[in-house]
Amino acid sequence: LAFDSGQSKSICYVDGNTDDWVEQTPLATNGKLELYVKSDETYVYFMIKNYRLDADGPLLIPIDTVPNQGSLFYGKTTFDRNADFVISVDGRDHSRILVDAYYDSFQYIYGENLSMIPKTKNFYSKDSGEFVPMYLCTNKELDLPQDKTKVPFQKYETGALLYGDADPESSGYNSLSDFCAKDDALEIRIPWQLLNMMDPSTLSAMDDLHINGIQPTKIQGIYAGVGLNSTQSALGKIAMNQ
Image (cartoon, rainbow, N blue to C red; front, side, top):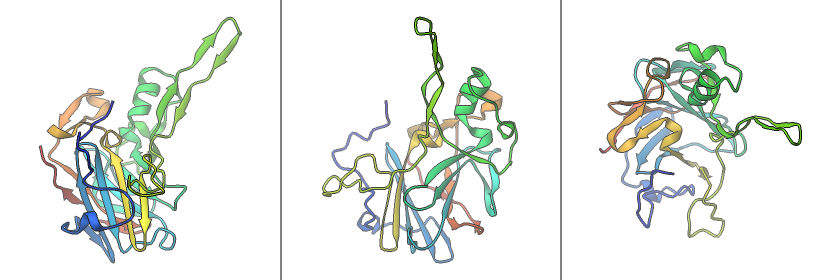
């Protein structure tokens, strides 16, 4: 099940090239860094100019979706809006999208409702500054009476980002690629569901889990910023078509 544009060609291919962004203007800037954003029915695409993946150190992209929740900081980095998610770019092998602990739907389903995993303290706290990995349950705990064994609860870090070239015409094409860099440009694509969006076409996001559970709420838009670690990030509003 996926949000899919149904088009034969994507509006953007994550390959490190900036040809797809020629007519775009920056959504946010931070020093030399420039953040560009666009979207289709399937993904939100980010492009950062003047950033070298293998030389400039860790990069953060805070994202604000639902009002009245989220955190104003992550580690030593501060934001001018409460962020619900942070894309943490830390080299080719350690990059991921993280969710504010308060807005972790995985914890809500399997910890709060089903008691299958340990409950985390900051799941109940707003503005904790704790952003946690995003997981997908791949197997609930199973009892096998004939074998007298248990299959443990298993999860997969669905928020881990895979480096590679997502251009179908490239010889190194990998359809699973999430981000790619070339020279001083970095491209990232994030599926809508990893932003807890329930229907991006109507600006419907997952509401405050602690008040309404997994229910949609209408939002006015989403915001994103950019910065290196230990800097302040200002978030600009992303244009979204309904």
